[in-house]
Image 1 (cartoon, each protein chain N blue to C red):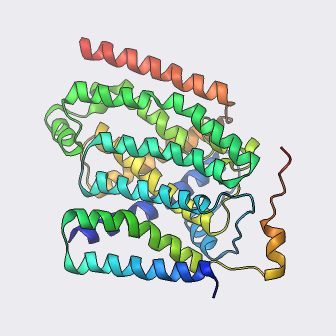
Image 2: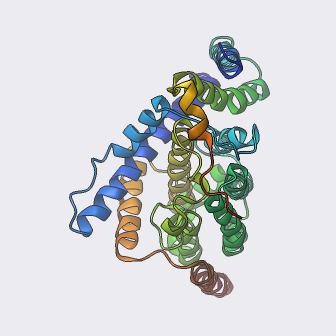
Length: 71
Length: 286
């Protein structure tokens, strides 16, 4: 498993656990706001990084090359 | 419902309604231009679809900033949902969020390494000059109501009538701001097709889906703020009808106007703002 995938799993699990904690235990308002602001966006981003399709390793280099560099 | 549940519910509503309204806008524009147009749920479907599309990050991208800036857009519009429908807090906070939206446009363009993105980044700074009137709207609302708290503004309107009728030119200025944020708007210079997709050009695949998610929330929130501040507290059906009407009106304008060049865009907005500010001050004095 590559670094991006490992980090995404880690962030996704932390985010979901934090959101469930705020839902179930109803902590102080500032904690709920912090969790909402940090972990709702991070949970969606990390979910996306996990669900996105990855190309073949040999084709990846071509796709990453910026074709518009000329300045 | 507890606070977290309330926030998640409101974020979900903002995303779903915002996405469908974007779809509705495209549909109306297409019908005006004698095209069948995409289904109304197309924007929503695209958002989901991009999450499972193949994604690659350009070599020229400034990592991890290139990814972090998309998260930043989501953070600020989740914050807007908390300030708006969840707590009905201060308008000042909402406009601070809007200012950060400009910074995100700027930095998303510059972080990609694409010249199209960088041109859009320059235009984001340039067009910020036309959004100074936003702060004038704030001042006018404060002079009229004596408060910046959204819930107090709603109470004021229940006693004195809708602000749309007493300070219509401030409402017009805010409407121009909403118009400038809609896709295919005459003022949408940061996403003009002459620079491909502007600051989003190199954000494709899942990152595009993520940006679209945040933009749907942003559209819902702009309409929510307009309806709440200038008409007053509505019930959910009232909000929905209001949002559909504004979106349809925006679609009509966008369907029949070209995207202006940056100079004309900024000058038109500044001129409308000047009329709005001068007219509102005269209205408040007499």
